[in-house]
Length: 523
Ligand code: NG1
Ligand code: ZN
Image (cartoon, rainbow, N blue to C red; front, top):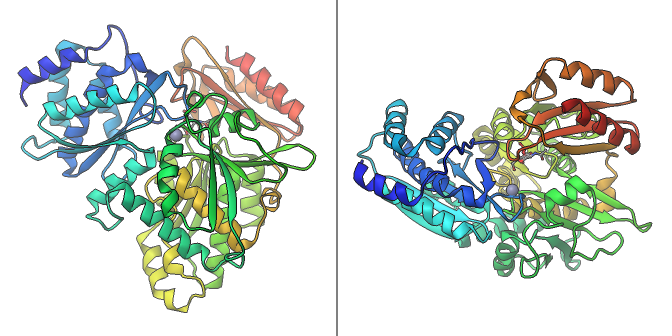
């Protein structure tokens, strides 16, 4: 390690005094002007992680659904997964080390993680469309370079695209070509394979209006247009040319406010969807003829995919183990429908797609979605092998469906999820209204409140119960008892300086009242 060069470069990316940040649910997130040193240091860490694993590591500069003024950074592990938890701690240590301790902290990480400093380091870098992202990604490059690492800057990409190229690179092309062209080709080929057996195919085009949150999704969907089969015609709204990123639009806005985004004109029963700011989440929605808005969130997306896969497995006589993975935010009605009507096992894990992904990998087929629309389907090697064996017998090209290739095997991906959903709706001949009618969501409310120190709240049971501060859970229990068919929980956010409150009850009024009362108990 060239400590002189390190000192010189680090001085160009100084850490603001007294600032401490944590590698949270999805990496570091903060106001963009606080992040230059974090980016430089994540460049350093990515080079070390690359040496430790002997693989290419990804660094994505984005703050997803957060306001345009924010930014963030997350590392992508060799198979396109989220950074291993043991390294999250190193990330936090490195980001918070004072200037004079930087060298010592790096040396300690190298010792603890057995990093062979003689090895080559390779890092892929991507960024979203935030005005601050270009400069911040340059700081990442400085960090990689000062440790002698090689880098490839993919520039503007969606988060899932960066995960894709990292996975392709490290699996020597088995997952696909590590280029955006490879990504578009892989997705459109998988989609066409799926849809060609559709009874509705050849009967004209499927129109879909997409709110791209004024973000990277618009750019990348436009790029993908020439690769998309003629069966699906996407209409892009909120492309970022007029309004600010995530402002009154995008998947998070639509999910939290349960209303349509600004900038998208909806006709009754028209199928619409929203991506988030880095295009790893998707939610669908429509308004009915009476003008009522209906949200189809991640829970209903998971349900649609599970129904399709379950029927398919039954048809080809497969007995593969399938499960749905949710978090505490999943609507209780979806859990009941999946378990009781569909008879699919459901598991609840902590918030954050890395926890869902991890659990999903315990099954041959793991369908995992957060209620906010972040998710995908993971398939095991065992599943792929048996699918290949039965391939010849199948009416539908099972080989193309398992592993469900339109579904990203690395992380939730709005573009690939959208193609899967469109294909399944077409194959099953379902309208958006029929899909929505699978079950009715229990009335619910998600609130956030700012408190002096959100970390005083500690939780257990997949975040459904608070263990600290003392007395809080007892207060919540007493409030929940006041309402019928109710539940509520609180947890500190891992991406914002807030505490989140979630409540369900028999009516919307009661869900709102319960959420409000719980929020008062949190202060
Ligand atoms: P936090 O801020 O930890 O609640 C939010 C989402 C997560 C996940 C991450 C990363 C909710 C309630 N929480 O996490 O599900 O998607 O952002 O983007 O939607
Ligand atoms: Zn996102």
